[in-house]
Image (cartoon, rainbow, N blue to C red; front, side, top):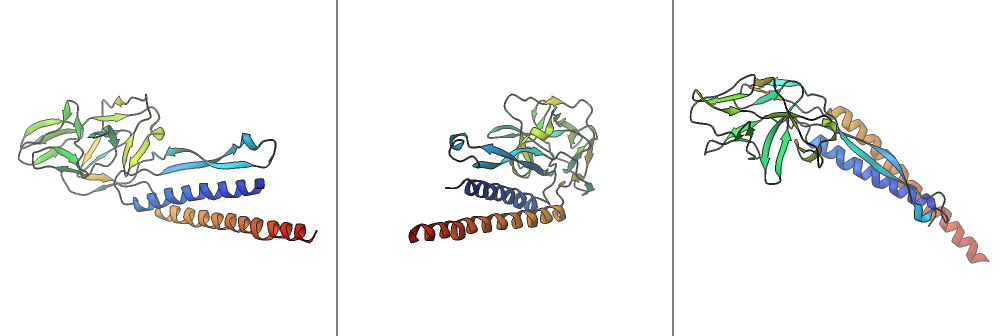
Length: 240
């Protein structure tokens, strides 16, 4: 197979990855605290073909980086909604371990546990926060009270390189192996508010259109190689 096939097919593969990412981001454009991602392209030389096919260089998706720019903070008037002003992430407990999020759309379960809307317990400085009965209030420093009783203080952490966090689905993130968070000593929390996604639907749709056109161009290139060039070669050999 000619090296041009590998270049075109690997280019199509990366466009499919881009389309998947863009579709996920557009679907989560209304998810509070959701962060978009950026990924470039890299050359991936196929060393096993170095001698036979000098042009066989794959194109592959580069490493992904989280776009950690803050989204717009909007007032919701809901007591259990919180938004972090500036850097920091809420810590939550999941079956896979402690995870981190900027999605402050919280809920109170029947047993009083403060959770995310997905049911993951929200961690305080001393573990999961359990609310007593009564009105819930969240202070600007993250202190949570219910019925006038302090239930705990939101555990808010930050990372030296937040863009290196890995998405696990929606606005839920985990650090790479060996990376540990640092507690934010003076967090600023807005109660009754939510941080919106930082994804621009207009930008993503424009990017989606561009990626789709690139994919179609590569598809046509493969068709030309297979139908025209290879076809002529076979016809020429057949006449000999």
